[in-house]
Amino acid sequence: MPEDKTGDTGTADRMTQARRRTAEAGLDALLISPGSDLRYLTGYDALPLERLTCLVLPAEGDPVLVVPALERPAAEQSPVGSIGVQIESWNETDDPYALVASLLPDARRIAVDNHMWAEKVLRLRAVMPDGQQKLAGDVLKELRMRKSSAELQALRDAGAAIDRVHARIPEWLRAGRTERAVGADIAEAIRAEGHATVDFVIVGSGPNGASPHHELSDREIRAGDPVVVDIGGTTAAGYCSDSTRTYVVGEPPEDFLAYYEVLERAQAASVDAVRPGVTCAAVDAAARDIITDAGYGERFLHRTGHGIGLETHEDPYIVAGNDLPLEPGMVFSVEPGIYFAGQHGARIEDIVACTADGVEPFNLRSHELVIIDA
Image (cartoon, rainbow, N blue to C red; front, side, top):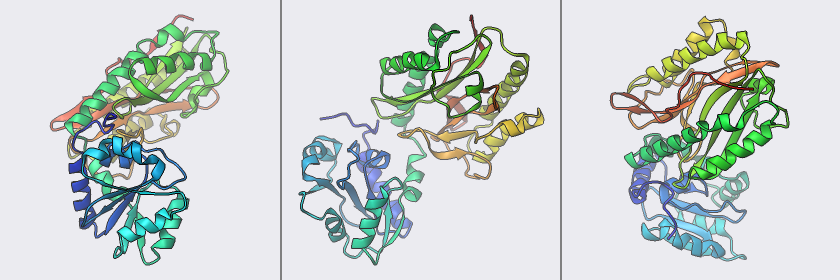
């Protein structure tokens, strides 16, 4: 049987909790398509196809997984086969949407997966015209934000693995090499450290470091370049890593050194602010206030962090206006950045967990600027 990619053995309990929260929200059912929510609830890493795969999870009644006939063997061999979920398959000439509707004859308030393809949402609406569609994420995020002990360990392991990759960056980062060549070495190392997939590799050298989501280019790294390296993947257990460090090849520019020191203080202050009861907005403000007071506020272009788990970006989001109080088990990034368009930029990112008495970082590499011989 394939590995349970939820990193936890409690999938049946998760569905029980999801059904309870569905009822509390006044909903009749959740409809979950392939993706992280389906993996979270069942452990099944289903292929996202044009053919409909859908977990029908009623607030009252038994769950049913609707799958194309050709995917039934994979579903049966997945953890679904051991947690008591009935599997209903459909043939190529059948209408799977009508099948889903037949399983929910009296449902009127139906929550669909946030990442369900629009064509599937619209076809479900057509076969259930009296149903009011909501977002399933409003129910499931309350469960997924609070990681179990098994999930915390999976994320801790992912953090340690990506730390080991960052430890090797000086082997590959040097003047004359292209970002793309360095990125290829990093991607190979990410896989070698136990990741099933490489989700992103950002090597932003010189002016490219001022673009937070720059990935790779054929630009040659030059002496004096600051280089933002933001990397992550998904481990075999199904959980994600994500960590950023900033390096300099050769002698760093003076103006860069001035704001990097501010960035270090801001990132440390934001991590130190993490504890139960503190809001996501307050953690954002802890970094943002320091950067703003130093005169770089307009250079901090994005939120301070995002939740992480089965997806690289998920709730909770560490951003101004989010007054959600932190709770033990919430895991997220703390990644302030300062960017000067056309020149250079810097970012420091750790994944951290809110604990009962404070914070636990899952990335333990030093934040000190790493200067590499040109």
